[in-house]
Length: 262
Image (tube, rainbow, N blue to C red; front, side, top):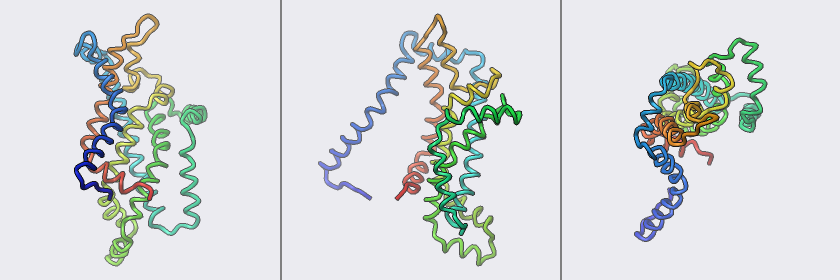
């Protein structure tokens, strides 16, 4: 691992990291300052007084939880198969899966809409959960497969000697040892599901099922555009993601570094 030992080197590295961080911090600082402009914390009180705000949070929580569970289960099983099983042509299947990363969400909107209507899933949470999970799986498999490849094969061979089948090896070896990369997958999946605007807007017509990303639209209309409350809504929307990242920060960083492509 790269390490700087001299004092001038440490100071220079700290200055470099600080300068690289500033462009990312400035929009966040501007958002918080803008949300407190004018009436101050009364802007947040006005946002929290919106009658359906808790329905928004509940809908976003249901969708995010469903997507995270699906992505975790599918990703771990798929990555385990790609990493440790001898499957004919598995590299072809793996690259076909990665090819799905090139498909933008907007391109898939029309076929997804037709499928949701024909299957009766339109205006249900599943119409949003299933496509979001499918869009998250390829990148998650890319990360997790590389992580599982780093688990020594001797552990699985020892488990087979002790009588464990492939599923028990997955349950007692893969699941405990992949907690760092699982935290990284959780954070990425949460961000993708929580911040998604297009799919809930198209597939959820019931106002009681709308997600938190639509909250700022309550303060933008034909004759009004209250930017302070829009920014306050954005701050409240981002809080769960910030809390989740801070809670899993160490595991996230370890998993992301270990699952990176080498």
